[in-house]
Length: 112
Image 1 (cartoon, rainbow, N blue to C red):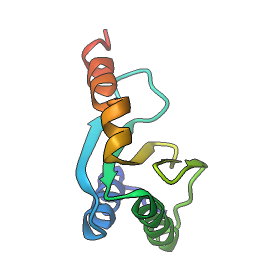
Image 2 (cartoon, rainbow, N blue to C red):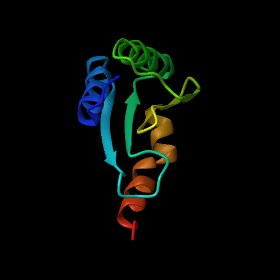
Image 3 (cartoon, one colour):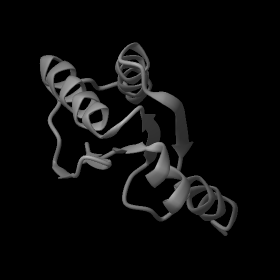
Image 4 (cartoon, one colour):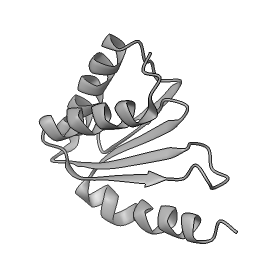
């Protein structure tokens, strides 16, 4: 298991980047009352790419002793929960439609 959260986040971002995910963003929410301390958003190139990115992450993280506590998978959007890190991989259409960046940014801004 990866004890250093920064190393875990860097590994996740590296896998996503190496496998051609786009617009990878990290939201630090550890000072906010939210279900995870960190959220990573990434855009896939298409539906099958969404699933492939998730599968690459699963394999790589398993090799480091990590496992997902829960996942919700569709071809257009995968949410993977590592407990302290929540990962959203979605097609550009879904990312634009649901605009989680605004929600997460506002959550952080309104934490007090």
